[in-house]
Each structure stands twice: as structure tokens, then as C-alpha cells.
Image (cartoon, rainbow, N blue to C red; front, side, top):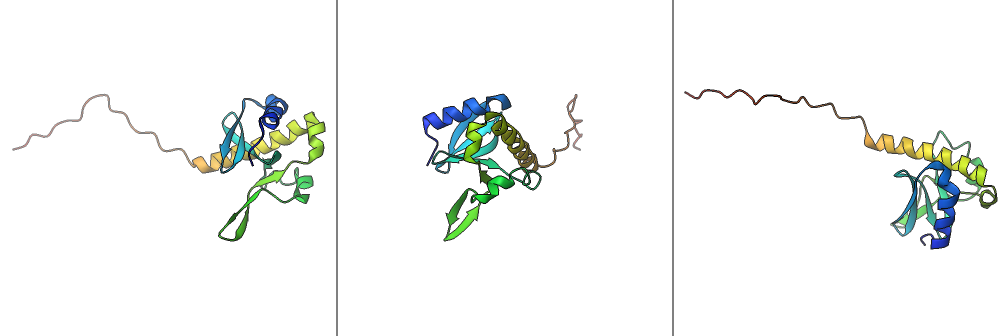
Length: 134
């Protein structure tokens, strides 16, 4: 179910204009990362890209295929990854445009998961004062 070495190399070459592309096995699939952010997944040499409410319109062509999903306790759970149309593998410039849009969605998801930044802690330049015990 993971990406074959040849397909993984093909994706790395095609997506190279985005940044550093890496792949990692995850849940029996292959996660596709750009600079540490997961923009897609591969299963059975089928490439899926991250979709959210802001980029759904761009990917409406991909909505014709079912999203990446898995079964849990007899229920099918759809993931926010839609199948890339096969025609894009013959149109590398357009594939990169789709990937840029997916990467933007992936960054939004990553920012949401990180949550608000924690407040900065005050640093002490001198040790705390000791109390006299009487």
C-alpha cells in the first residue's frame, strides 16, 4: 500500500520546485512532506493531496474520486486528502500549482494544531531572595 520506490522518486522530482520533499511510511501509506509539512499521501501508487475549506474549489475536479479513507469499527472515515487526477502527471507545471495549494492547506492545518504560542517566561538574572527563618 505504500509508494513504490520509482513512484516516490517520480513525486520527489515533480514536486521539487516546492522545497525539500521527503516521504515517510505512515499507517500503511506514505506521507509526502515538503519542508516537514505533510501535503499529501500515497497509497497503492495513488497520490492524494491535502484539502480544506479554503482550497476545495481549486480541487473540485478531484472531488469526482473518493477521498482517501480508512475503516474503523465498520465505519468508513474520509480523510482530508483527495485523489490527484491522473492527467496532472502529464502536466508537471499544473501538478506543482495543485501541490502549492495543498501545501498552503497543510500549513494551515499545522498552524491550527500548534495552537497559540505560549506566553514568554520571565527570566531571572539574579537568584531569588531568601527569607530569614526565625
